[in-house]
Length: 97
Image 1 (cartoon, helix red, strand yellow):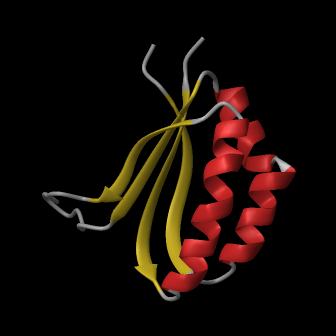
Image 2: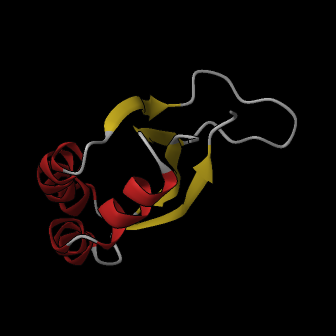
């Protein structure tokens, strides 16, 4: 079974305070769902058409766990706190077997 990954890039942070409040809620929600942060930082380098933006990668043991974590009540509550504070790209991808 392949692992599942959240891959999130932040194109624009409009409200850093709301992002900080979201971060307080999201970390426990991710950990409770079995997620493990792999990356949580601005890009050190960006090539080709890349942009040096904040990137977050979270690993889950399966795609099902990754999806369930996103749909969980605790993560959805964190999203409400985040609101429109950021513009971001959020994907769930399957790891290479």
